[in-house]
Image 1: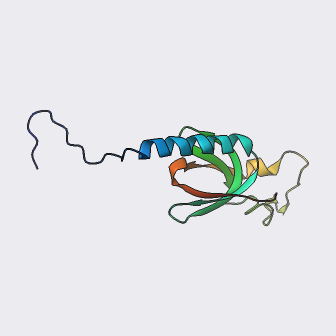
Image 2 (image 1 turned 180 degrees about the vertical axis):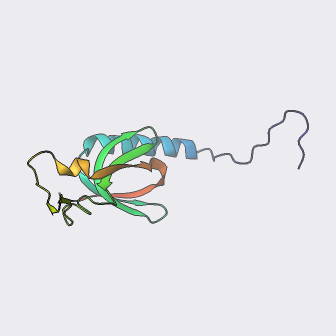
Image 3 (image 1 turned 120 degrees about the vertical axis):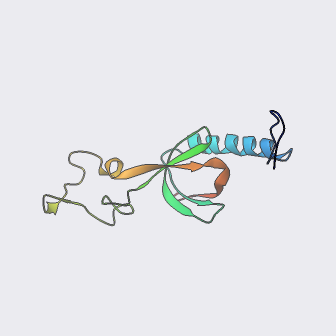
Length: 120
């Protein structure tokens, strides 16, 4: 396919209602990020992926959740205990272990399908 001169060919353009729908969803999810910060949730994406964690915050096109680290740590909120020099690691004595053994995962707002509040 050849284009003459400096013409650009549009290969995708969102429908007229799509932009407003995305803005409305972003506004709603930013409010959820504020109202439910530090609350445990289960999130399902439009692709069927499911994440459980704690809402950190929402910023721009992302909702950030704190999830258990896939290596070491609690392995799902206290089900696995890391060792410290061959001995069980002290719990609650030196620091809040939850924040040191977890990662923050950014999820794209327009891909979120369901957010369920856990442990109400």
